[in-house]
Length: 141
Length: 340
Image: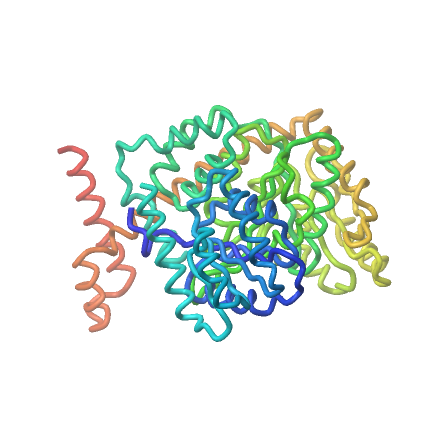
């Protein structure tokens, strides 16, 4: 099946944890919409189980997390675990937010597909997400 | 219709694939991931999805489908969150299918109904699915019926379908749901008049949400006046006009009772089977139109099309004659193919 044109890419944009700054998440959601994707936007204060359950029910291609609280090293492993329990750990997970440089490698080891720090161009985010979605669909067929 | 949803139907899948039926069996056995994947397959109009639907169809017909429609911002999602919780407390399994509009410019969309349903998200007796309308007018997506069928087949007791924020003519939900709940907000005044020839005609239950606002009584009164002239709907059902406040969680129980009373009324009269029949006609019509849309796309995918367009530009031929000639050539080709 041709992925590029025929199937819409579905992205979950979620804000796990307790910080209340969702402007970045909204900007990204809008940019992805304008790139022709379907964005399921879950809003603030999502628990890891909520994120994983939404990813499952919505048959998501890519998960995008926005974390600005600094709690990424605590939240990400729990989200990965919830995805694994639902047998959907093959969904690429991206993280946007404020992440110290030394944490990026740690997050990568946890299975995060990419980290977008402040100043990342939306064009780059769109390209990475599209590439990851297409690669996963190819692998699953 | 967008280019995508129309053209992706027939091509690309290998017809020998057993993915659709395999997923259908897993879904029937209770695999939620299989259900989610099936919903994508039917939403994308794939052959695998169609094969799965064939497998699943004998298992459908048990669910009570309840439509939530009304103006944008009337509070449909928030109210639905409360109502669904109340149904859960009574021990029912349920699903929510929430439709939001697709951008006509990019083909993309932001689906935000989950935002207001956070109380339901991690409940294993609830399945929530967001759908983009993908260019389909009428308040639903092209494949909403198929998505409902999948959820029905796997044993969901109640399926709530939330339409795109709808105006006068977006009445597709009437052909899909057994019970239509129209949600409006206070302060509409003359707008109630405008609803007369559309949504008010299809409503089985009318809700004035945001009941904590001062103008609520006028709105209830205005709606009452408007529907008074039209009498009650078929089968002697008296349309209730209820007041709710989703944020303060008042009036929810009365709404739940009204939905269940409507169900009882339908089952006690012929209304339930009449609605099932109406759905069957609408579903067959939907598929017919889908097949014809594919034909039209194939008609347009020819050199004749370009030649005729050029002739129309030169005023050597008018558009209606051009279309007729394309259609004739296409059906002749089809007939000879069928004979061969």
